[in-house]
Image (cartoon, rainbow, N blue to C red; front, side):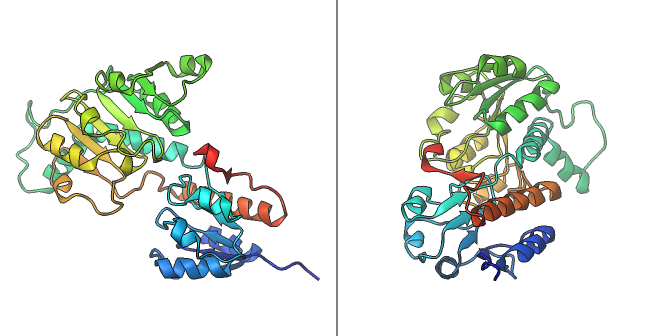
Length: 328
């Protein structure tokens, strides 16, 4: 007799190609509405499934994981970041956690460069003027932005995405500087033409553009706090396509309003989709709805990673993208 198919619960709508393949391989329960599950719905799913496929919108903390049944053995996260999951508690309960790394590197790096250009060249402001009835036509001193060639880019977090940003920035003629918890190998540094700063404070004080590309962990929460934000030059701009919690959003808003920071491009926010209204009102800020990885190709590849992790686990092997607490 054929072996029993794994019971898999998916918490959000996924690309149709991914849902179709998942239905062929597993006994899957798909999400009809593209809305986050409630806490009780997540608890019910974890109590009755072998595998849960959550997304960043599902906060699986210790209290919720305590409601998981003995049946749940794998949380196959649809996303690279796992700060929405208490990985240590999951492992203590015998639940493996996997993610989808290396998929959204290029997409997120592209969006980072888009935001750098958007803020320095005032694209959002120009769009609003062109859409309004107030545009009086071209003028020599109108809508002056800044040239990015020759500017110093400081990258906070030089992992895969940070390195991809560095390569793109170099092609635009920017000077690349970086701070990372571990220094890159000399040959990688040389290839990227990147200058390492052991002191984040010293780097921040010297750069023209700061790109946040580090994950959210307890050690990076408000890493860019009010004190550190004040080290930025008044002409500097800050771009974040990583996690909103890395920046003290209230402090950033106050300083942009006061003219102490020239502008910002943000794809992520400290409180999810609850954006500070004062931040929304600033003309020199570009706000995006967490779309750094939002390409058709990227989202399908993320689903393929999830499928491989579940199928490998079902076959009795270690998922290739297994996450362990020591990695975080």
